Image (cartoon, rainbow, N blue to C red; front, side, top):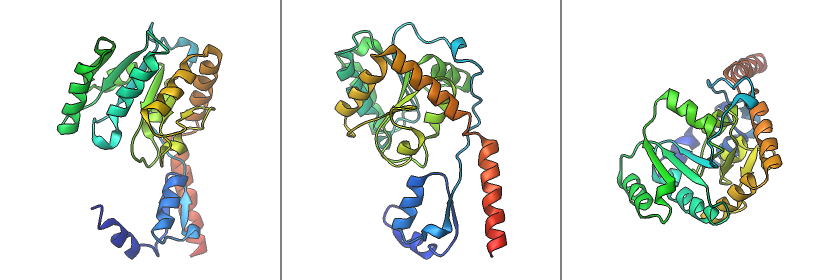
Length: 243
């Protein structure tokens, strides 16, 4: 798939495209698609934003969340390393990891957790249902996302809708779903050290953290399926009239 992708995208580059982020648009342009034939519409999530941030109860100790399938492209090991570095500055920091383990990388992550000097402060939850997922998104203080690449970063917006900002790597999709230092933090460099700096910066200043929370929550209200549908229909109508 990796080697065939440039070829089959080249065969399709005369088509019109609807993309979910500016990063995806620029990626398509690298494969020969014309900027004029690419429309970017709003992403949409089904997670309903909480009604009131003040009603959201966080864990007693500062807690970071890693949520999603544990695979190499998600770079979960980087999150554990960043946690260990950040813990030197925030001694009571906690990490919760939720997601399926299905390959050698996942098993490597489990071994890394067991061998960590802070293993007692890392909790692996396995797969979680929607109820537990909602609880984790609300009660955690920060969600970590370190994927190699995303189309948008839906989990970021889902977390934002529950009152939790994100610390992410500077990659396609994540730089779209996070407004740096406004709704969350984007690492200056994509390393555990860079991520740890973001974690410490986010959690060391209570007023700044509350500002990030509120901005993320307010922005998530704009990234709903209804808005995505409206953008989609307007794009289709525009192309129909033009052609």
